[in-house]
Image 1 (cartoon, one colour):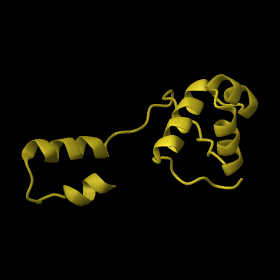
Image 2 (cartoon, one colour):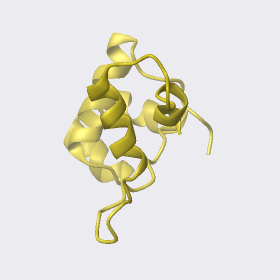
Image 3 (cartoon, one colour):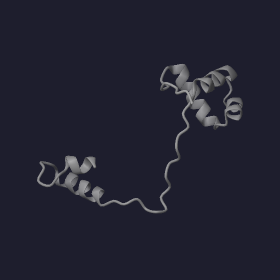
Length: 88
């Protein structure tokens, strides 16, 4: 664990940081805590469909994604901030 490596016993650190790191090492995930679902990566084909349709609603219906995810992806593609796609 990173906190244990950075804040080992006897390390030069602020007491409050040392206490927070110690508390972190004792943390256990609650059994009923929701786990984030696996993310679905965008493919080159999906990117082409999204740009061709130019409608988040239509693209969401065709691609089986949410309108919000289509809106964000289309914005990222147009502004050059989209991560590279993977072929699936």
